[in-house]
Amino acid sequence: MATANTLGDRRNAVQRHALAGVQREVRATDSSGRRKYLRAFSQAFRSYDSVIDSQQLAEAVGSADIVLVGDYHALPTAQRFAASLLEQRAHPGDRPIVLGVETIFARHQHVLEEWWRREIDENEFRERIRFDADWGYEWSPFYELLVTAREHGDAIYGLDCMPREDLRKIGARDRHAVDKIAEIRDRHPQAVIFVLFGESHFAPSHLPRRLRERLPSEHVLTVLQNVDALYWRATSERQDHVETVRVNDTVVCVFNSTPLEKYESYRLYLSRCQGEAGQPDLVPTIYNFIDSLLSFLDINRYASHNRTQPKFLVDLLPEVYCGSSDGRLRQLLERATYEPKKIENMLQKVEARGCVYLPSINAFYVREFKMLHAAEEATRFLHHACRGLPLRRNGRPAAATELSDRFYARAIEHTLAYFGSRVLYPARPDEPASEDWTPSPKTCKKLLHDAIRAERAEFDALAQELGYGLGSQLYNAYLRGSVSRTVLRHWFLSHIEEPGKAAKTFAEVLHKVCSTRKKPCGSAR
Image 1 (tube, rainbow, N blue to C red):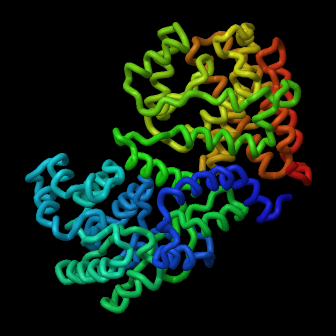
Image 2 (image 1 turned 180 degrees about the vertical axis):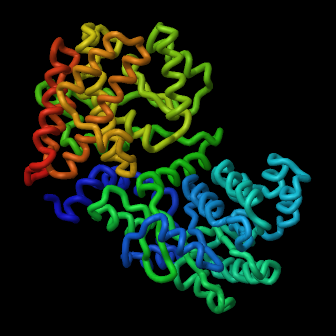
Image 3 (image 1 turned 90 degrees about the vertical axis):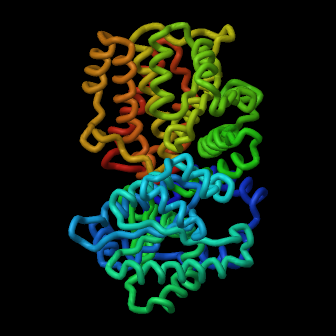
C-alpha cells in the first residue's frame, strides 16, 4: 500500500514538472515574487490543523462577522468561488450581506452605485471604472461576482486606492482598505462583510493584523484559496480530493484549482498583456504539457530510430491555433475531414471543451483555455505521436477499418487521454459511474455490440464511455503503485492501428487493472 508521501509524489509528478516550466517563464517576466511583502504570505501558511468538509466550512463562514476571501486575480475560479460563498451565506431573514472589493477604486464608488441602481449598463460601468486599463484581468468572473452581490446583498464598495504597481506603497493600501472596511461597518452595523482582496494582503502581519487592531470586537475569518504549500501537503492525504483545510482558528483554505492551473492562468495573463492583439499565446502551454508527459513516461523525444521510441518525436509537435475566427476553425476541420457530420461534432466539442486536437492534420485549435480539456487533448496528441501520427494525411497507412478494431482503438485513445489528464490535472474528478463501474470482458463486448449497430455519434460516445471508465480505473491503479511507468509507456507506443492490435492492447490494460485492484505491487517504476 502506498504511503502518504508516495501517494503525493504519484499524484503530483507530472504536474510539478509542468509547473516548473511555467514558473521559470513567469519569473523571467515578473520578478516581484522575491519582494518581502509577497514572501511574507508564502512563508506564513506551510501547514494546517485538519481537513474539514463543506458543512464545517459553511459553519465557519456562518459564524464570522467579516470574511476575508483571498483572490488570485488571474484565476477566474477564484472570483467564482467568492460569488458562490457569498450566495451560500445569504439567507432570507438572516444578517444582510455587504461586499467590498479590491478591483474597484474607492474613488469610483459613485460609478458603482449608478450601476447598482441600474442607471448605467455593463459596458459603460466597465469603461468608467477603467477596468481594463487599471486592472486588466478577466472581466466575466468578476462581473458575475458583482451581479451575485447585487442580487443577494445590500451594498458593494470599492476598497482600493492608487498606486497598485508600486509595492513600496502596498502597506498604505492595506491601511486604506481597513479604513474603508471600518466605514462599511459604521454604515451597516448588522451586516456580514465579505472582502475580496489579493491573497498576499492576507499574510497575518498585513491586512488581518491592521483589521484586528481597528475592529477588535469583530470575528474575522480568512478564507484562502489554493495556497501552494497547503495544496502539496493535502495531496498526500488518503482521500482522493481534499476540498478544504482548517489552518488555524481564524484561517481556512479551500482547493478549487491546482498550482499548475493557477500559475498557467497568470502566465496567460502576462502573455495577453504583452500581445499586440491581447490574445494569449497558448503554444508554450500545450508544449509544456507534452514535455511533462514525455518526461513522466521517460520517452526520448530526440531518438533517431523507430524501435522502442518514436523517431524524432520532437519534430512531430503539432501546430497550435489560438483563438482564431470560427471561419478559420471550419477551414481547419474541413482539412481534417470532408464529412459534414464529423465537422459538426468537432464544432460542438470545441464549444463545450474549448479545444480540440485534430490528428489527421496534427493541429490543435484552442478557443478557450480549460485546463482539464487541454491536458486531455495534449495526451491525445502524444498517443498519436508515439505511433508516428498514423492518421496524418502524408501517405502513411490509414487507421484500421474493421469496426471492432476502430472501436477498441478509440476506447484505448480515450483511456490514455483520460489518464494523462488526471496526472496533469489531479483535481479532475472520477467519471460519475467509475466508482460502481467494474471493467470486464462482458462489459466491453456489450458496448462493442451496441457500438457496431450505432450511428457515428453514438459509436464515439460508447467508445468514450468505455475509455473514460477504464482510464479512471487505470489512474487509480497507478496511484496504488499497481501500474508502472514502463507499462504505461508500452501502451502509449503500441501500434493499435494494426489489425487486431487495438483489441489486444485494450485486453492487456483491462487485465492489468482488474488483476491488481486488490493486490497492488510495491513499485511505481
